[in-house]
Structure formats: structure tokens, C-alpha cells
Amino acid sequence: MSSPSPSPAPAQRRSRTRRAGESAFGALLLVRMTFMGLLALLLLVAAAWSSWDTARHAVVTDGRELGTVTLVHCDLERCTGTFSATGESVVLEQRIAREPGEELAVVRRPGTDEVLRTGAAGVLYAFLPLTGALLLAAVIIGGGLRMYRTAWGVAGAGLAVLAVTFAVWI
Image 1 (cartoon, rainbow, N blue to C red):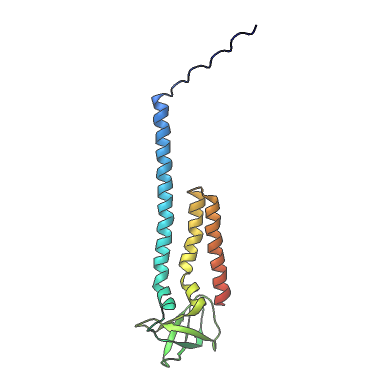
Image 2: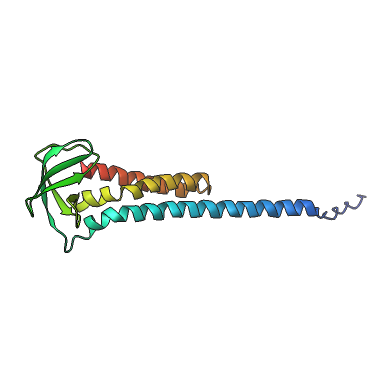
């Protein structure tokens, strides 16, 4: 006959030290996840706030001076030209060199001699800080929060907007 199978040993309780260590580790993980989530959110909100300062003029054109600018002189930082609505000399701040003689649709920033591009090119260019923040937030989401698929999605969205911006801008 077979001998009866030995009964399993009763489960041993973990020590107080081990339980405290496990709960402290869990608390540290929660703190890390909260901090990284807030950091990514802060980064995106700050970039949106920064972008909106310029984008509001390109997006909301009601009651603003709309027109075209014919570029007269350009360097790497800015172009100057004649604003068609008033005939005054205005400045177009930019980082992409343009050729004198080009004509661009613009809106005048109130109270200044600065003009901003309108249309899709102007809106996308105005939101470039937000696009860069998306790329930076993707690193935080992937590395700090360990949410790899979400990070790839955010990075893909940032790269797509960046590519469309420069395709439309030029």
C-alpha cells in the first residue's frame, strides 16, 4: 500500500522587516510614477502655453490686420518686407531662410511691426514648441513611466507633426 502523501507545510508568514520593505518599495514606485506623470504633464502644458502666445494670432484672425508681405531683405534670423494692408515695413521672424521677392499671407501682431504667417503653415509653425514637447514627453513616458507603447505613439505624433510643419512651411 502506498503511504499517505505528506500534507503541505503550513505557509510561513513573512517577517515584519520584509513586509515593511515591500510596502516601502511600492510607495517609492507610486511616488516615481506620480512624479514622472506630473513632469510629462507640466512639460506639455508649458509648451502649449508658450505656443499659444504666437499661435493665437495665426489661429484667430478675426479683427486683426490680414494681408500679404512681399519680402525685401532676408537673413537667417528674420526677413523684412512691405505689408500690403498698410504699405509699412514689417518684420517676419523665422529660422528658415527665404528669398527676397516672395509673397506670403500674414497677420500683423497687434501693436508691433512684426507679422506672423497665417494658414496651415503659420499654425503648425506656431505650435513647434508643443511638437518638441511631445518628443521630450515621449522619453519621459517611455523611460520614467515604462509605458512603451504610449511613448511610441506620442513620439510618432510629434514626428508626424514636425514633418508636416516643415513640408508645409517650405
